[in-house]
Amino acid sequence: IYLEAEPGHYITVARKEKGSNNWFIGNVNGEQTRTSKIKLDFLEKGKKYLATIYADAKDAHYKTNPQAYTITTKKVTSKSKLSLLSVSAGGYAISIKPIN
Image (cartoon, rainbow, N blue to C red):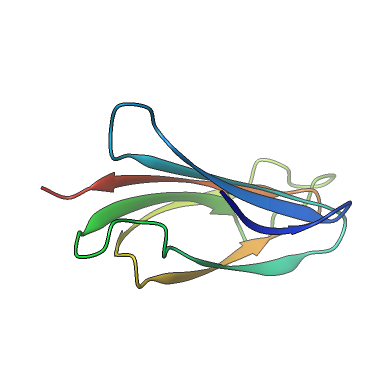
């Protein structure tokens, strides 16, 4: 599922793992630092999930600090919206798993 895209600038894609209810989201960003805003309305309604977010740190930069990142966890549902920093030539990845 394409969550957001601007050809030549950025793309954010979600994919469900085969044979499970796990989801994965990946973002690749172009030259301009931006805040990515995505909805998780593709998740099953009424269920709770745990999202593990691997994102660019505020001081990340592809030339001077390319390995600066943060890892956070957050409970989410199909009603959740995320705002994530995506620095120049950066991106993020999210693993989303159901909470039983």
